[in-house]
Image 1 (cartoon, rainbow, N blue to C red):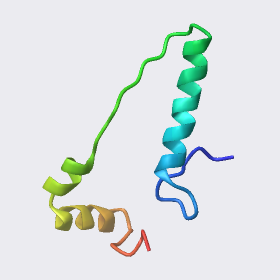
Image 2 (cartoon, helix red, strand yellow):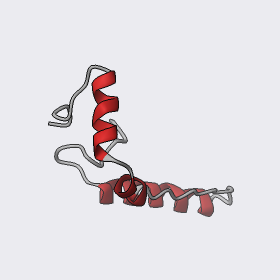
Image 3 (tube, rainbow, N blue to C red):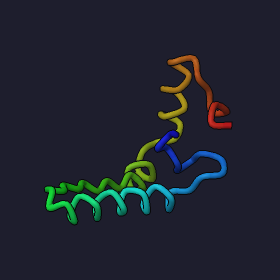
Length: 68
């Protein structure tokens, strides 16, 4: 079973969040150390030139329709 849920048809980011939360709780209950790093890429994608991203996709023989 793939752990990729966000941006996958029929799956959600919420399912991934719940799965991660469940694993963290199990580790804490087992008195294991848990480290978490949160990354938020929303702002990064809002500030970068979309034309530049499309040009980079074309450089690797991909185009703007690849996400389809």
